[in-house]
Length: 76
Image 1: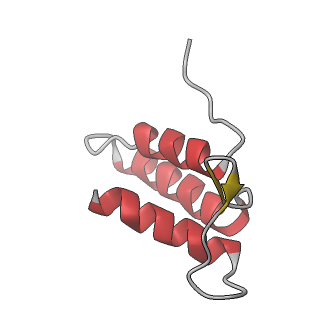
Image 2: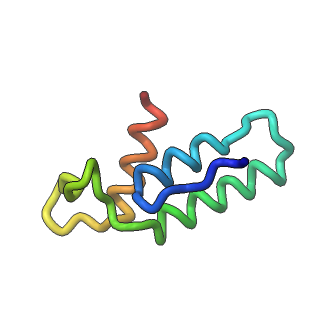
């Protein structure tokens, strides 16, 4: 059975990153990138370990937090 994304932002990001296939054909890589950008724009509100995500700045939009989460995951 194929893995399915969870409902939390962290679960969905983990799922998206696991689906990335560097050796895939260009159309598949583009579809993955589209899915990532859709998640960045309209993903769930960020929640970490049952608590609210730490705000880097007051009023930080959720999309900015999701982008930071992607960059942190890629940096790790």
